[in-house]
Image (cartoon, one colour):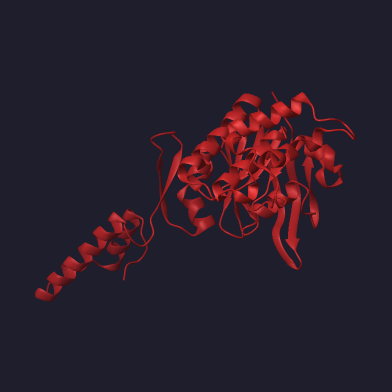
Length: 311
């Protein structure tokens, strides 16, 4: 089992050039749990992860690992505890899969030390876990996007850190392999106690697999907590500008977000049909004012089905 580590952000402000992306953020990552960071595009999810792994220095505030500022820790010391799978990593040209995954062992090797049996075991275990062992001798350049993504995840696993950060780990993967990867990370968390923090775009997968959700909006923390508390229609509207319904996932029992949108909404379609029927009847008998509901009654009907004003 891994050790529990305290990973926090304290009044963290991040940006690029003159643009501020994260502004005065405070958050606590629950140790030994799976945390998913969600939010709209360009809200600061990847920027936050980069700073938590020391790749981006803060303008102000700090990221703390066990009370130490990560930006002041020696790189190798940090890499033995905290690993990162970035969003679009680039492999050295011509490198084989086994060599790339083996690079995950570098933080554990001392100067002039030989490759050990533990290193071999870590690489073999990572290749097996990600179903990439049969690719070990192939060049990374030859692989498909999905295969390449699984190899990068294998590198992160070979590093065997107590804290693992992943930026969109399901990118380029079909739905089957998305589930495989998230199941793999869940097993890693359950068996080794690894603290996992990942950025996910799929709200429903985030709610299913995470113990803790962090919802960002415009560079600020909008909500944090268990999925049952965070994934609400109000949060989805505030963070994504999307009208939705939240139901119970019949498989996991976790909350499941169902977007409304402008089409394929039965309640909206039913209200529109009622409107058309009333208009037809009103044209046939213009004297009957009761066929067209007054504004207060109409607004009550719209609130009941949870839709906006129909034209």
